[in-house]
Length: 277
Image (cartoon, rainbow, N blue to C red; front, top):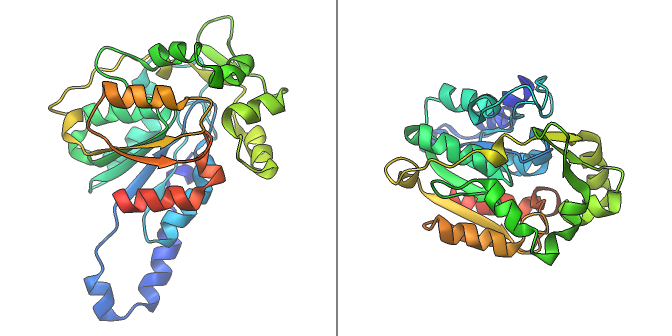
């Protein structure tokens, strides 16, 4: 996990510094640090394409693995709270001497909401990428249940099911066509291959059952952006827009992509992040 916690812009920044004229170096304003938070089943490396674009533009980027994902050794049922689940992201946030931009995809939005309420003084902007964003007293699960009635989400419920202990959500990776339709409809087969080799077969249900406790004074003090993905079948556009209405105040951008724009349109996604950071 340590590798995931390194800021990936170090090499690009070093090269730029070496070739820039002294006057240019003095006039260059340091870029905002960006922490990208993945969603259910996924891993920090799913953002690699986007992180590369951001790093080349001079932004320090971190893509940590949440507890039990990627390189993190915790089992999916080895913790019981969002505090434990989000700890890898929290560690990077706490270690920064400057405010950072938090980008959260899908269920990663729950981690953003939790950390924003806890550390508003550490965060300069929240960017929700087709992510769960619940008002005080609600949780992501409330919106997931609404998706049961939306035809666009039918493939998701054909491949996702709770395991017997209720603490995990299984993704049936043997049904590749359905998984692609739900998450990666506009992504290349190569990207789907990479995802299939790296996503978890079972993800924790802790984040989707976490009740939002946001306040206007803390969470509400941080500027927010919501990037909607209009062709998303995992979190249909109707649900995305309902959450934006339930937690008003975000500046909205649109991408005509599936759930995984970080694979299918990384340059366009990076451009929005740079524009809003």
